[in-house]
Image (cartoon, rainbow, N blue to C red; front, side):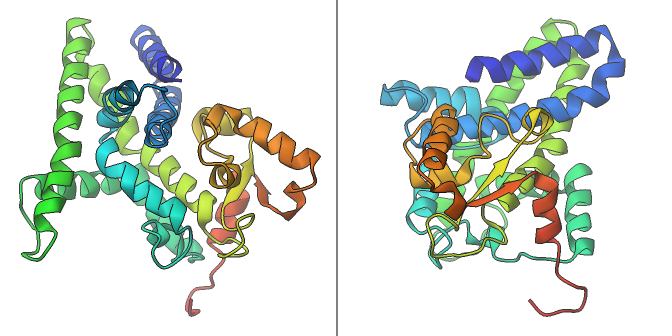
Length: 286
C-alpha cells in the first residue's frame, strides 16, 4: 500500500511534467492518495502495517503520516479512544459527526473553504502556532498541546523539505507546489471531510454497533478520487478493528453470507450521504 500510494503520486507527477494538461486530473488523484497515506497511518495506529512494532511505527510515521502532517504518536491514543467510545460523549471524534445534519448552504461553505485552501491554512497555522507555544491558553494541558503539535510539525517540515529537494534535483521544483502542496491543501481536505461525514454522520443509532458506523458501496471512480484503500468499509472496521483494511471486503462478504449486512448501516455512493448530511432546513433548529 505504501509503495502503491507513492507510485501513483510520482507517476502522476511525471505525467504532468511530460504533459501539463494532465494537472487538473492529477490534483484529485494525488489528493486521494494523500488521504491514502492517512489511511496507512491509521493502519499503523492499529499495528497493521508490520508485525514488527518498531517497523510498523517507523513506516506509519515517516512514509505515511509525516508527509501529510500527521503524528502517529498522538493519533494512536486519540483514535483508540474513538473506538472505545464510538458516538458516546467521551468519543474525541464526536465533534466531526454531531453537528449533522446541516443546511446545504452550510455544506457548500465548508466545501468552498476546503477547495480554496482555507481549511488547510487554518489547520496548519494553528498547528505551527501551538508547536511554537503561541496562542495557547495558559491553562493545564498547554504544554502537552505544544509537544503534540511539534511531534507533527517537525516531521512534516523535514519530509516536505526532502521532497522539495528531490524534485528540485530532478529539475521539477514547481511540482512540489502544484502537485504536492496544492492537492494537499485542496482536494485532500475535501475528501477527508467526505470521509468523516460518511463514517459517522447522520447514522441511524448511536448505540447499535451495526448502525453507529457506516459502510459505503463504491465504484472505481470513488476509489480513485475519494475512498482509497478500503476506507469505505467503516462499519466492518469498527466491528473488527484489528482486521487489516485489505481484508475488510472479505469480512463484508462473510457478514453478508451470514445475513448480518441487512442490519448494518450501508449506503451506496458518497453523494447520497452528503444529501442526507445537508438535509437541515434553513432556520430550523438542530
